[in-house]
Length: 355
Image (cartoon, rainbow, N blue to C red; front, top):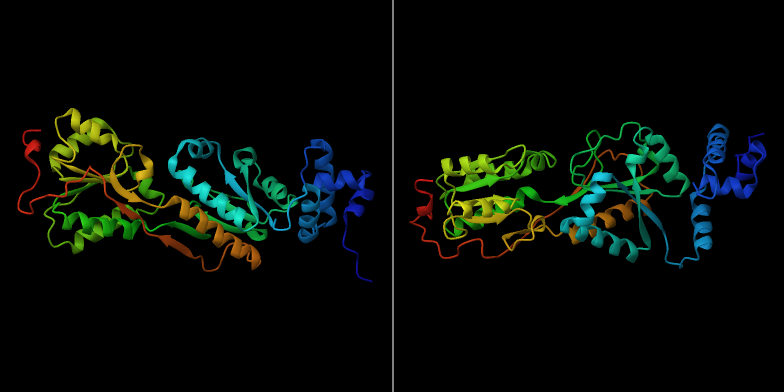
């Protein structure tokens, strides 16, 4: 006769705990002592217990008195450094607002899990997510790409923001950095700028596989009017090194993230936008009112949830054989850090002479 699949009652008989205690332990409830929970989880694995996620979801809804539209929780895998950043960064606040709102529209809720807690054993994180009945993972755009060695993705639908993982590729949602900068450079050229300078800290570009630099260089190949192109990609942006580069190459428009360079230039008597323009690759990175790209983080968060929920409904789990990337181009935003009255025959560099 075929063997009967182990149930919660089987584990209860094996461990000597009540069915209620076993059920709470398998959901990683705080009501169960850690030592008791460890014994029950070990027995569940030894007996080959597999949680019925459909029944588990129904019971969770009943316990929590949730509405009929509730479909489940989506786990956001968080880190301590990223948690601090997302609480103050306008970019991340907008992105998670978009994700949270779209998740609620589709009947899901976001639940944050601090992966630093499980840094020594990602298998433990798997168990927690599994016994919570979570099968959808949202990976935010960590500042630096992460390793998830030892984590088994096979039970989860996953979406990643940017390419935030080192060794595997999941379905991704991210800004179209390449076309965004190419389109922006075309527009700056049409405005009369002729010596653009790219100012991006290298780690910012490395995490997206140098898309800012490659887009900048691609435009350099097709530009018919620009006279010179220069790139400044330091490990960290430093005032003295930036000014040295600026005085050597004399760009007439700066394209980058860090608007504090405007202050550094003005301290040296170089005016923005009269002497040099400034265009931000991500306006959410600064509170200063600058011309630049709105990379639409609110929409990105919502689209990421759409991609993830579609996988959940289709029961698509694990590392995809053909990962898909959804790209959204940034929107140009006019602001007073660019000149719109340039004479195409005159470069705006008078204040640079002798600097």
